[in-house]
Image (cartoon, rainbow over all chains, first blue to last red; front, side, top):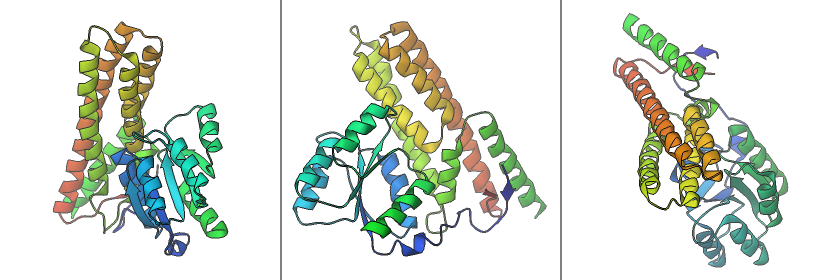
Length: 142
Length: 152
């Protein structure tokens, strides 16, 4: 591990950060730690973030006319879980990029979550590299 | 100035030891990389959330394991949550202790679960103490007018 001194302890994410622009992300997760971390990560990329704590709140938001470029959807949540919320959003015609995040490592569970209509699925917490690739994909396709 | 340099050296040495001894993994470094001038307390805030969450979960686990009829599904759910939050902040030894704990839940081994609870509590108590020491060192540097060393 290499150490240096500087006025900031922040690693620069310039480039992708600057083109985050006005892209919006809905973070759907009942874990306050993950919400804080993912929100911070996405904000550093210049993305506008909104958070809700379960799938039903996410569905209700879209149903009320809100729109987001990307949804970060946790798998396990009370009231309505990630797979169910994803199915409902796709059934409503929502074509935003939906990225599943799960703390479960089983490949079968990830595949099942993907089958609900996700674009991608990752283990949480997301890393800076993964968020970079998500933002790049978002900019390219949406 | 010498005092600041010495404190910075102590912080670097201490942080390195936490990684070498497995208390922290790269996820903690990821959190430190996210911290900046506009969010100078980000790491402390996230770690504080982890402390609150862990203490709640450890209490719930202790209650659950005291019940006459053990609900292994409930116990496993709590351990799963604790594993998740420890992994979110890079508390590697707590995370690993939780993985072992879940194995005993899966086979419904009561004694194994009770031992694992003690193990998880011990690891949590250690990492809490280490992180509090780390944050105190950081505060000393900042109070002396120094800057925090960057970890690359």
